Image 1 (tube, helix red, strand yellow):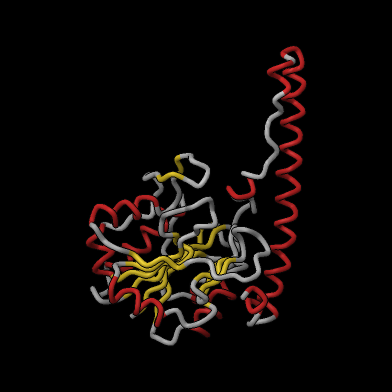
Image 2 (cartoon, rainbow, N blue to C red):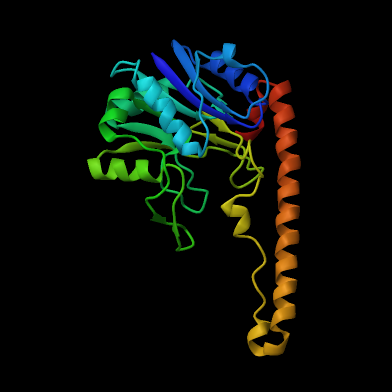
Length: 269
């Protein structure tokens, strides 16, 4: 049995599209467990189980996994799936090939400044291995990003659990031929689409790295320092607002496309 664990927050807009792509593209029997915090409307009947939950994303994923492990067998597979992600082709042949030789298969977002951890927009693991690893989606464990800084994110502690166990995992990498954004609208392994920021403001670490740098004139003109700092702050604020607005417009356009055309992703491949 395939158990899908998915989290939606604050909006029902992704529920029907995600379920439609799941039913269209996964050929094996599956049950879908969901977290629906602050999602308006009655959607419980669309799922095999809705697990009441609140708080950080990682905690909800861990809770869904615990609920699945309470009823599943060791050889069943948990597929973690962000609410704004879904398969665009049957992922199970890829998953089963990966699990023949490695413990886990998941998206790895190298394009996000060199992220190293499994990402929960798509991850598949056998129930027995999740139990053995004491799987945990929390951030905490750090790695060095592409710009040399220490960073952690959802999936950090799962990466460390794999390292401590000496387990290999199979990364699904971005396979876009067309990038509308460096991070959003990603196709991974040619089997999974992740919209990105489907439940929050569309600003990523990749975007923030492009923000205007602080002026260096303040060091040579100390009296002008306060004025320059205010100008820098305004300049960065305008950059963030413009970037977020541009990304939001593009996200809405892509969302309309995927609703109207089941093959919308072809333009990205």
